[in-house]
Image (cartoon, rainbow, N blue to C red; front, side, top):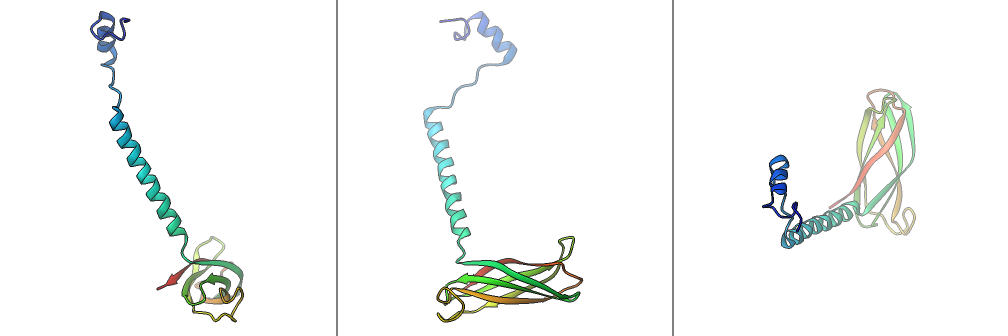
Length: 146
């Protein structure tokens, strides 16, 4: 046994006085508990992220039009279950990307003959009043209304 591993040797005592006593390693039980907690938290986060990302509705900006300094429109394509109702937030922004107009539009249930993909995809127009001249229009988000 060398002088460093023998904690009663003069060299070990000198090192302990200078740098402090050596740290104890985690026990096998503590390592298993820590890894289990990390695993459960990771799995919970993954499930939450996947479940939160699937809202049952997707949206795509088709076009926008700035009619005048007080009015803008946004055309969007909404894909959802034909029997459900969705709401979509649309907004108009100025050249500084500040919101100058905002509205929530409702996309009601569709028949299988409406839109495309057997009524799953519908194109709608959102209109909004603006405080000043907008330079773009966007779809902020869509969600299913229960």
